[in-house]
Every structure is written in structure tokens, then in C-alpha cells.
Picture 1 (cartoon, rainbow, N blue to C red):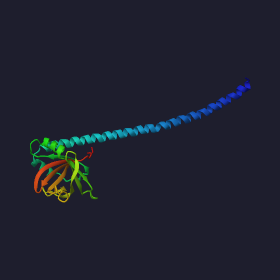
Picture 2 (picture 1 turned 45 degrees about the vertical axis):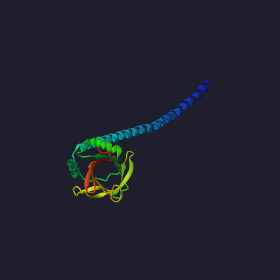
Picture 3 (picture 1 turned 90 degrees about the vertical axis):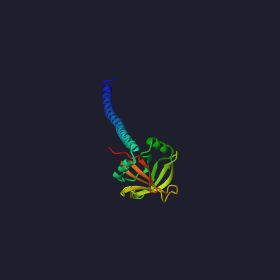
Picture 4 (picture 1 turned 90 degrees about the horizontal axis):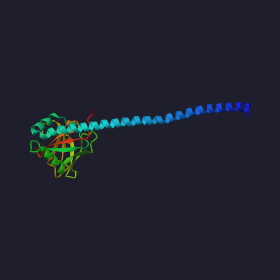
Length: 218
């Protein structure tokens, strides 16, 4: 090979190297751009995981709070439950499904009674079909061991039969032939926890609690 041929080949090699450098930079840039969304996605997933974890913790805290209050209520005489009710405000009307607990105030084995009533007779209420201002609506009871949605009532705000102050009334008089003599009242003692009173005609017969699925903010 001649000296002239070698001289001509050298610039070609330099040209190829110069061309290769921008291409390598371009490929490196493309790889970085491809990896970038993966990092963002991981951060997003981490934030979602933290948010879900916080929400779960709040729900657990809510359940512990209401269960503790219910344990106290189940062991209290009716007089003390009446005082708790009188000092509470009506609060917001519950929305959707609620979990119910029957309270036989002052009766024997109140916790056993509450469990038996929940298994065999009554599991709570479902609040639905609200007026635009959410101050009235329709209630359906969950009854029987199967938790069937039966026994309809109207719910609205009105004066309590206990102290004359505002309360949330659950009225069966115009909606149920079987339960037309029954009147319930509830007030929100703690966020998501309601204490209720039951009348048959004008006679007080029972107390109860309703728990919503509301999350208590930190």
C-alpha cells in the first residue's frame, strides 16, 4: 500500500469517528429520556402507596374509636345514655350504609344481647334518596339473618320527643304497616357515630347505635 493511499484513508477514519460521536451522544440522550418516565412513575406509585397507607390507618383509628365508645354505651344505664344524647347535636344525616348495634340499656348481658340481635334480627340502616339539601330522605332497615333491606321509613329533621331540641327523626308512620307505631331519633355524638332512641307509640323501648363508614380526619 502506498503512502498516498494511507494518507487518504486517515481523513476517512477521522470523519467516521466524528460521525460516530454525535450518534453516541444522541443514543445516550434517548436512553436518558426513556429512563426518566420510569423514575417519575416510581415516585407516583410511592405517593399512592403512602396515601393508601395513611387512609387505611385512619380507617383503623376510626374503628377503634367507635368500638371503644360502643363498649362504654353497652354497659351504661339508660339514664346516662339519655344524658349523652341530650348533650349531642343532630349532626349530618348519615348517607348510604350504616352498621347498627342494639343497646339494651340496664338489661342483663347487654353485649350478648347486641351480638344476638345483630346476627338474628337487625344489622343497621341504609340512608338514600335525599332531598337536594340533604336534610331529608328515605331509610331502609337491614333485617333478618340475611340482612335483607326491608321496613322503609322517612327521615328528616324535627323536634325530639326527649328534650324538644332538633334531632334526626326516622318515621315509619306513613311507610310501614308493620312498624307504623315506631319512631326513631338519632344524634351524632362523635364523627360517624350516632346514638339512637326508639319509641313504640309514646313508650321508650330501646336504644341503638349507628356507625357510618366515614373516615375521621387527622
